[in-house]
Length: 278
Image (cartoon, rainbow, N blue to C red; front, top):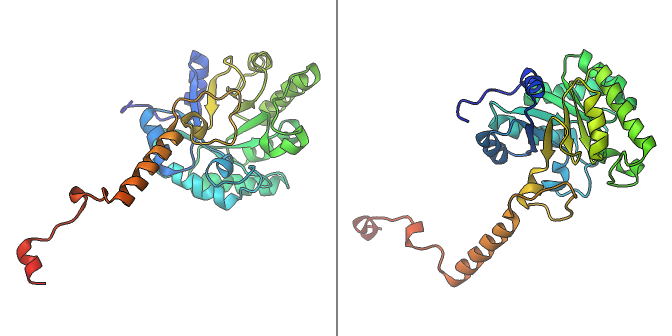
């Protein structure tokens, strides 16, 4: 994909019209984002999930705007064609519209993202509208929203009964009316996701929402086998790099202790005549 087209909002809408699915992964650092760009991944989410998968927090709640800025700048330095989305962390937008616009603007101005994402449906629609009115593209996020896990009773799928499914449908409508240019559904039954998709004019993406959507998002550490604490049902593991890393570390330990490493090929030389004059 050396001549790949740069991804923008028009591209995303065109692919929706053509029925072509969008590939979307998270990234939080320069090397990972570089490899994703090389592979042709179309969208990158610099998620607050990096607080758990990269920084070692036990949830996404402790992640700060400053930490998000560091991760997001690293990703945008690595990307040229990929559409990069900054994830609004906990309490960066909930306190009020002014705070939300300010922090969304930091993603765009300081990091050079193409859009921001925030969690919440109807209750966040006024905030989404305010951010959009400020000229910042917004992706809405409903379903299992990790920042609201305490209210939801933990990291549980949503929309599995008639009432909560109806609420998700209303959430999606509210976000679209507020100006969100796309919506992400997380851990939602595929039949409910299809209903939302059928009633929406904006791209609908899924992470654990079945195949009847415009594209798929997964956490990069999950698909590579680099995060061991838990594995959501919707994750497909494409590699087991964690096991390969442990094997490499063990081999390194053995070679250091045995003296096998470094070998002659890893050492710098000084000519004999120069050495004799020391």
